[in-house]
Image (cartoon, rainbow, N blue to C red; front, side, top):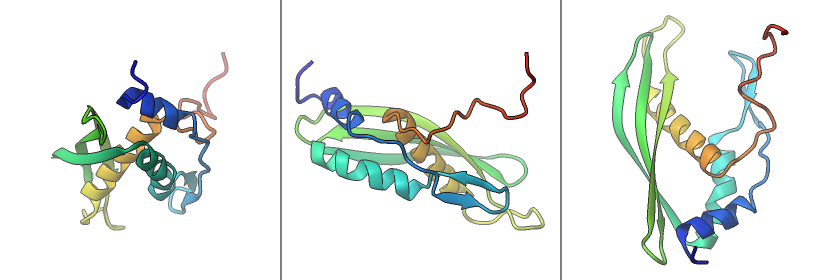
Length: 141
């Protein structure tokens, strides 16, 4: 692998990534989460230092039931030095409704934000210190 390849640059970034705290709080459902701003603030300078640009395209939006939408998003990394690219598809889903369940206007944006944020989590192996597969109320075997 060439030392200036896109993969080598991503590997360098992986070595500089640290755990992100859950600084956001959802008061309605009472849980903490890692904000998009925290994720972007972590990876943006690392990508820039390696000369990697990111392009995000919303390819498809589906209206689901109960004021939910699903967005199919393509995120493409481009190495500014070599022109090498790596595209990934990620889906995001969101519900945006008022207290009476009527749809509001930010569902698509929330879905795209979720897709982009989780693309960054998975691409750069960003830990928040928990395991989403763990269930506190899971039956003991």
